[in-house]
Amino acid sequence: MPGRLIYLMGPSGSGKDSLIEAARRPLAKLGCDVVRRVITRSAESLGEDAQGVSADEFEHMEQQGAFALCWRANGLAYGIPVQIDEWLDSGRNVLINGSRAYLDQARQRYPQLVAVLLTVDVEVLRQRLTRRGRESAAQIEARLKRSALFSADHGPVQGESVFLLDNSGELSGTLERFLKLLREQGISAAQDRI
Image 1 (spheres, one colour):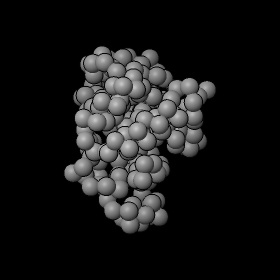
Image 2 (spheres, one colour; image 1 turned 45 degrees about the vertical axis):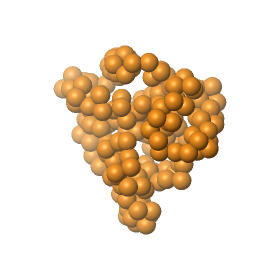
Image 3 (cartoon, one colour; image 1 turned 90 degrees about the horizontal axis):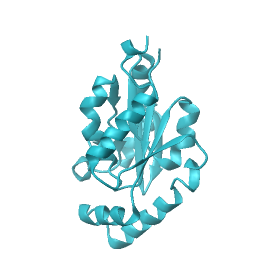
Image 4 (tube, rainbow, N blue to C red; image 1 turned 180 degrees about the horizontal axis):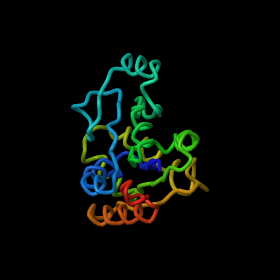
């Protein structure tokens, strides 16, 4: 049986990278690979394990068909390596850090994907964005405004089969709920699905 794509989304600062890192070991037990994204900014400035490339390198990779999925947001380009198709075909489950605005396109290519929207209280989100020190106050407000456009009540995630996961509190609780949700959606090692 083919594997399932787990499409984790959420606003910048919602804790996606922290959740992915905390989930790596338990996800491996569920036969799930975590994808390393390609992003057009230096790897040193990233809060995730990603491959940083220049805009020209990204364009070249995109033209060469290196990405299964790619999108642009917040002035950056993001790509998911085409290797995920091999993993899914071999029965491996795959977790990606996706974009809320790109969900419809991702569903077209992977209709059976499990969409998970990580939510967080707006004040908690503002504090997290401020603490990480990557953006100016104006950029933080722009991110908060964009986040409101793509909330569970608005934008492309509205009316879709999207699982909401609140990450306003302790990460350990979010991780526990995330893994429970995945098991409920049939995410398990290939031998368990036979």
